[in-house]
Image: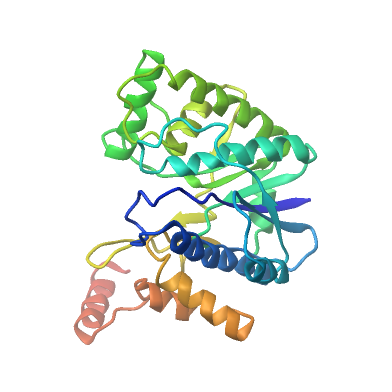
Length: 315
């Protein structure tokens, strides 16, 4: 069996600014709508019975939300948060709920079951069959492709050095995608628990979160062979003045779009659209909403330049 997994812990207070929402109740409402879009878009493109959906939460959900999620085939699992919690001094400390969930998965499912843990703000646009075939018996993560001086990766390397007393250079794996068979999930969880335990005696850790923990765990365990999932998922940073968007929504197309800055906009539009129509709009419509660049030049001058360039260089 294959399992698609979201997890959502309700915090005591909202400590991040990404959602722009000030109360835990409003924040979890937003994330639940994102999660429904994530699960429903996967089901739309993967209708077989060999895929099941799990949503882990740490609070008693309202009957209304239970009905909405169960209607699209989501199994709700109530699981407490906090066994692997370190400190609330880090803005994203709530995501350490991931390890409560990973421990549960490792202890409750068969070794050959396939686990795919996704963030709630992920939108699926195609079949996951190639992804599962490619994954095989390996761990899959999203490779952020940050160089060693990028602040996010540098914080990870610095923190690992503070914990272990040596400088090592290893991949910064993103937290939005963890895919593997459950027997590997057991090994990964054990390795992450060890890093968590080792970190308790370290001082002056910076921005310590799940990406730091998981990346260090994979680095320090030779039997955890990880490969990038970038052929199947990409993190599209959509902002008002700057976009980090590849052409892989159109060419060499990824099937999972991670949209961290679209929680309140496009993901909510997709939620409302799905609740009204029972389906999602075509990909090109969503691409336009996201502001993804068109495949052709957008104005006459750009078209003319493209023609001249093609005649001059043959492309």
